Amino acid sequence: MRAPATVPDPSLPARVTVYEVGPRDGLQNEQALVPTAVKAELCRRLLDAGLPVVEATSFVHPRWVPQLADAADLLTMLTDQIGDRARELPVLVPNERGLDRALELGCRHVAIFGSATETFAQRNLNRSLDEQFAMFEPTVRRARDAGLDVRAYVSMCFGDPWEGEVPIDQVVDVGRRLFDLGASQLSLGDTIGVGTAGHVTALLGAFTAAGLGVDHLAMHFHDTYGQALANTYAALRAGVTTYDASAGGLGGCPYAHSATGNLATEDLVWMLHGLGIETGVDLDAVVATSTWLAGELGRPSPSAVVRALGGTVEGGTAESPA
Ligand code: HMG
Ligand code: MG
Picture (cartoon, rainbow, N blue to C red):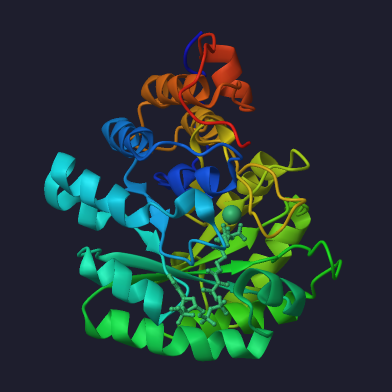
C-alpha cells in the first residue's frame, strides 16, 4: 500500500502548506560535509516533488554553522540550474550582515530566528533575550524596504534544555515582538521536541487571545519524543495551515544538543493525505528523494514512512568528519 485510505474530517483545514526545511534545518546538523551539488539536487528534487516552499540554507556566520558555509555557492548553483525560482527559496538571516549576503544573491524571502529563552538566545545568537530584538529590528526593516518577505521563527516554545519549562506568556511575548517587527508569519518552534498536544492547544489559544491568529502562525515540530504528529493534529484542530517538516526527518539544531530531527515530511504528508487534506505533494517522489539522500549520507532515514515505502541505502558521497 503506497498511500493511506482517505477519510476526510470536515472540521479540519481542507489544504495545508508543507514548508520544507530539510536542506537548512536538516543539513545544518549533519556531521558529514555534504557537497554543494548534492544540496542543490536535494532542493531541486523537493521542488519537483511539489513542495511549495523549500528553505534552502542560512546566511549565518560560517564558523557557527560550517555545514552551511557554502550558502552563497549553493544559491549561485541553483540560480544557474533553475533560474529565478532559486530566488524564491527562503534563507535564514540572523542580522544585517546575513541580509546583505542574501540581497547580493537576489533572495526574495528571508527568515529571522529568535529565542523564547535567555539561555538559548545567548547560545544560538550570542545575544541576550533583549539584545536579539536590536539585532533583528534593522534586519527586518531593511528587508521590508527592499520588498522582501520576512518569516520569524521563535525557538524553545515548549521547553528549553537549560531552563526547563518555558512559560506560555513568555513565548507569546517574544513571538509577538518578533512578528511585530514586520514578519508575515511566525513559526513556533519545538526545538527539542518536548511539546505535547494539550500544550500546543494552550499555546495557540494564548497567541489567538493576544491578537495573533492562526492565519499568521506556522508550527515547527522536532520529533525527539515521537510527539510531532500528535502535536500537528492538535494544531490542525486549532486551524493552523502551515507546517514545517524535513524530508526523511533530517535535522536538529547545532546549538541545542537535545534536538533531533524535524517531523519527517513523509510522515506529515501521509497523515494529511489520510485526513483528505490537500498538500500538492507527491509522496512517492519525496520518499525517493529521501532514499537517495540517505544513500548520499550513508545512513538510513529515521522516518517511519520512508522506511515503510523506501528502498535500501548504499554507499555515500558525503565526507565523514576526520
Ligand atoms: P557574533 O560572533 O556575535 O557576531 O555572532 P558579531 O556580530 O559580533 O560579528 C563578528 C564577526 O562575524 C564580524 O566579522 C561579522 O562581520 C561576522 P569581523 O568584523 O570580525 O571580521 N558576521 C558574519 N559573517 C557572515 N555572516 C553573518 C555574519 N554575522 C556576523 N551573518 C551571529 C552572531 C548571529 C552571527 C552568530 O551567533 C550566528 O551566526 N548564529 C547562528 C546560529 C544558527 O544558525 N543556529 C541554527 C539556526 S536556528 C534553528 O535551527 C532553530 C529553528 O530551526 C527553529 C526551531 O527549531 O526552534 C529555526
Ligand atoms: Mg528547527
